[in-house]
Length: 380
Ligand SMILES: Cc1cc2nc3c(=O)[nH]c(=O)nc-3n(C[C@H](O)[C@H](O)[C@H](O)COP(=O)(O)OP(=O)(O)OC[C@H]3O[C@@H](n4cnc5c(N)ncnc54)[C@H](O)[C@@H]3O)c2cc1C
Image: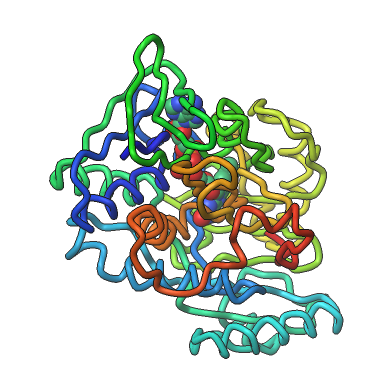
């Protein structure tokens, strides 16, 4: 078996293949070390508060695995359930949150609840709340350390015999007729019974080398980071404005600000930080969190990275149609770290033909050509 890509998803599926007894698993990565793609750029948010059943189920399975991570994998995943606080500024937004809460609770997220403005103030006293009408809060949500999850799976999978090769030339797929024979790495051909595409934002490029059209596109996302700032606690929940997706958290004594608004929706691999945007997000942050007026953005440590966007912002999981032996584990659309524990297990079980923990039909690769995408989710 070959896994292409040593991001968090590649390492997770490699680990689960090894843990399920698969021998001779090889992970090929063109970068010199793990985590060089989007995984190293993620901010580490984790949430069960999604608006489709399948995403909630992926989060619940991931959460179970994150809770067991230290014992099973031997590393602290950094999972800290400090919560996600969604804030609504009008009744329409609140009604959407209520609908989402009903779905989440029905699927098993017992910790999620609607909160009044007074409770919002208690949960996050730093927020300006005069324009809010209510919100939702779940203290199963919170944060992880993306590179620690990756490192955990990487090391644990090696103990199970998984082999990693870094710094290889970009992998291409080697196909004969309707079946994949293996991969081509530089001048070398490596035969494999199955190949897993775990190439994140670059997944469509790999698929294309076997003539497979995979609708995954890169989307630049930026993070503005303040200089060290001690007015907000590390335990502050991720706080999100439903109206425009502005959200913030504290990590390692600095505040991370994210704001999809004002970003170009171009699908390029360019990850240049837009300095104009830093000012826009800072202004927005000061409106919602007035004490941030005393902070300053540190442009040197702010950064940009790529989401791996699918047309309906849900993962694409399954064997590629018309290319037997090619398994897709792609298109998580900015939720790939939080769902990596679940997707790794699901991907490994799919490849090995084992029963799955739940129905993943709604993630099938063919749903776009069937005109049956998932409804688009939330704001992030
Ligand atoms: C700013 C930002 C914030 C984010 N915040 C969050 C968050 O809070 N929570 C969350 O869950 N997710 C978040 N994400 C999304 C998350 O980073 C991704 O969903 C996740 O990292 C995807 O993991 P991956 O393993 O699929 O991809 P990657 O980590 O990108 O790994 C893919 C690997 O494949 C390699 N590769 C590609 N093509 C080839 C090839 N042909 N041959 C060999 N190797 C190849 C690449 O070098 C790379 O190492 C965020 C992303 C960004 C950019």
